[in-house]
Image (cartoon, rainbow, N blue to C red; front, side, top):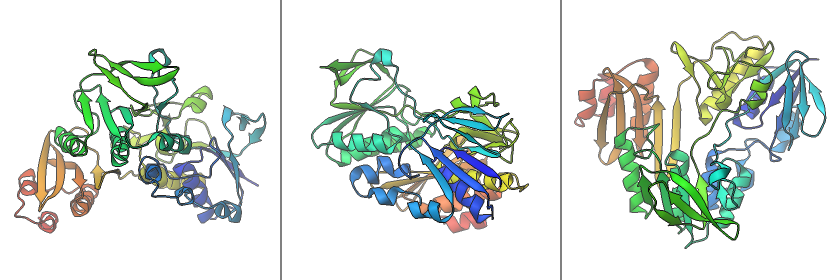
Length: 403
């Protein structure tokens, strides 16, 4: 009987196992996860879960009975320490080994950390990626305390929003000249900077952290590169993530901004596939790696079909979201290569439309789900309104699509 092993029990790994069963695979499936908890949603960690608005049971992608009913063996709290693709064998952290016929790597993307040389490993310094991270941070988030956030991307901004909503003083430091520098236009950055300022968050841009300070062995603040000193009760580091390629790289698999796969999810090793945040795949003549829940699910499901003999290539349709305070940001498409941003205000509902050579590339929609859906449909269909028509708010979004 064929045995498919899946390393990485996150959104992609859980989705891939479920899809294998949905497609009729009746062999053995083993899902290996480093964390002890059932596969769970990550986005609510820094939002509803930390705010206490979502119980742990609601975080789980599927209940325990789902895996039992579908005969998916769970090896949780267990890390894969080595992979031999020739012998088709996985070595596990408990000293055991596991043989497989086919393997899927859904190893995600761990957070980047500050170097220990500047205090990155001090008690009171946190990242936001796991249930354990969120549980530890929830204990720190007492009204009146001061949280320092390092990193002005979406993870850092979401953490700042949660803390400010809970009555903490928040200072956010971004080394780049502005927040969201890698992922959004200045127009979007300014909009979110103003949103956070309206909730009392202090944002410092254009300077990094030289070192973290400590008092009695616990972090007590930071010294910035420009010499400023900031006191803090604890620190959240949100400086990005990296693809989880260590196991694959040690096994000799091709790496190219992630585990390199073809359009069917196949890696450079026969019978070994990869999907989700850890994998880069062909996209519009180049390669792309997407860090998003939708891609984790869709790429995993497409890869599951390919593992069972399917031949349909994966075609990514990028979309993302972020929740901050009472604002839902929805993003469709990729803004890579944009040269023009059109700001549209539909009766107070804001959206920023990115164009490259007058071709619509992406949209940032703030509490504007209709603009998001209209832009998403046009992007996926290869259609593009002119920038002038987008800027003309006398034209409805429906008329933009029709035009």
